[in-house]
Amino acid sequence: MKAKRVYDLPTRVFHWLFATLFVVAFTISNTVDDESLVFSYHMLAGLTLSFLVAWRLVWGVIGTTHARFSDFPLHPRKLAGYFKGLLSRDHKLWSGHNPASSWAAVAMMACAVGLGITGYLMASGLAGEDLEEVHELLANGFLVIVLLHLAGIVLHTSKHRDPIWKSMVNGEKQHVPDHSVPVQARRISGVFFLVLTTAFAGYLLQNFNSDTRELNLLGSSLHLGEAEDEDEHESDDDHDHDHDDD
Image 1 (spheres, rainbow, N blue to C red):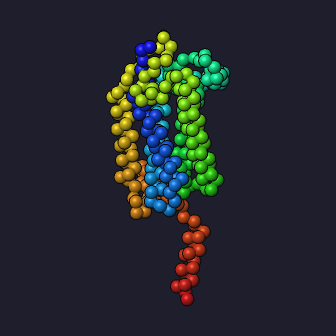
Image 2 (image 1 turned 45 degrees about the vertical axis):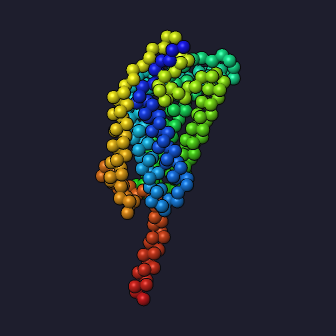
Image 3 (image 1 turned 90 degrees about the vertical axis):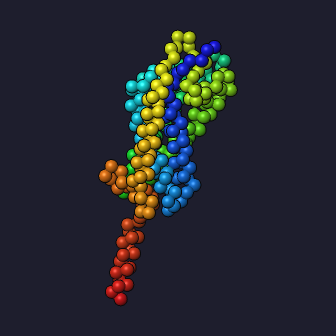
């Protein structure tokens, strides 16, 4: 069976950058103390991840057939049918995202948006402890979805002898419906989005002061580190003032 291109380059560039940035951000946040300078880079990775999702939302409207959100089979009945097919020898062929991967993609992007918003509010000093808990819940939920997604890929590949993971490497699938039409490669757009994301990451690094751990983002000042305890800070100031009076 001849392989057909189902994913354009921008979609694949997004997929691998999205995965890499999440792994970097999640690993740093869970292995590095927030008093360390390295912890700030988890926030920079998170901001870049948010930027990445922004252009993917645009590409989900103007991209090639299977990059568009309108192509995602999100009906619950289709999802149930897909899982039923995993347990039998009969399964429907999907040119683009199958129902499970469609739901996983939407859920992961939703988590990324939530993490970006809560992370921004925390860094700008507008968040309390409750929002911090929401941020952690979203990160852990993101991880669970990733693990389920990977498990689904392994199960599908072993059950149907269909290595669907390769489609995000070369953009091609062999097991697709006969009527499926190959999509355009869109190589220039893929390179453009890669350069654009790299440029945004460079902008963040250029405007990040590692001494103060402050980021100047489009005129706003964000503190990429542990928030100071205002009460404790005020207590220290009062103590110093009393010491001067003595």
